[in-house]
Image (tube, rainbow, N blue to C red; front, side, top):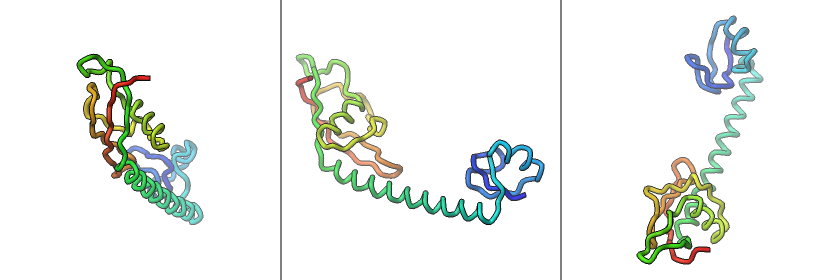
Length: 150
């Protein structure tokens, strides 16, 4: 029996694959657990249309990420912190603080998980930070750490 997998099934296939399985396996395991649906012409057409729609959505998200990367590339983000006499910070600057500063200064909302810090920022000064916006799209921004905590 031909079925379309709705989830990844171990040793059978990945989500969206059309596979041949035995009738008993399909009727007693895959179909009742909603891991697959029968590969009828209408179901195959629905899956094809959904895949086209998903590809289009992914392409739009990629374009949006590229535009965002261009906007961010030009920016210098200022982060104000408290520090000791020698310029060492009390603690370190985190991705969350950088994301908050980006939101306040540019209006662009970036998830803190997309900010990649190679090592914690523990000193006052300017640093280059990698921001991963989408798969394959990333940019570096300048973060200027200054004295003057809130």
